[in-house]
Image (cartoon, rainbow, N blue to C red; front, side, top):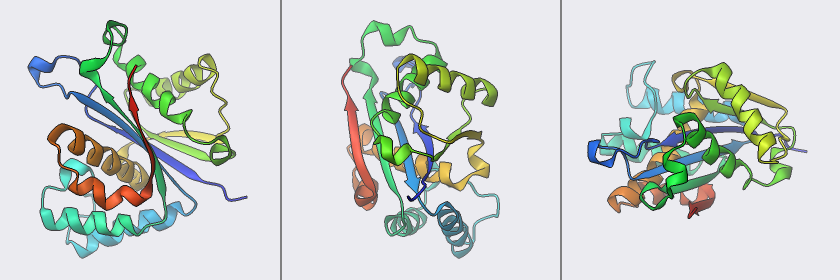
Length: 206
């Protein structure tokens, strides 16, 4: 059986202060690959080909150059991974979501997405998430949320890392960023590059 490595990241923010610049949409994306080191090498190669600093972190918002954005997305479009994502229109959420703490809101939608991923794909896999506050707290609370929501864990390992040190998280950020751009600005050009790599996008309706 092929064992997958998953990595997840979010785009947008968890605030409802729209009058102060909070994003209307919040997206979480998870990628899965049987060859994680190939994806890591891919970003290293794109970095070298684009004459970027060795510590350049690939995030969707960092792809400000049209040439870099197209090159990165074109390479990812041919890479061996698939992804799942959830998009939330915060403006349509009930008050129950508005009173959640930042951690609660984030973990609710991370676990909402995880339960959409087929159990057989999660079996024995590794899940890597970007830090959201304390790494120890995130690990503990994620397990608690999965248990409380009766979501079988299946993952053999769950790790929390900083995105700048984990290229797989950076790829998840790019996927989530293309969705945020699509829904916020009505611009699907970046999303279209990766559409074949995306298994499902769930539009959360509460």
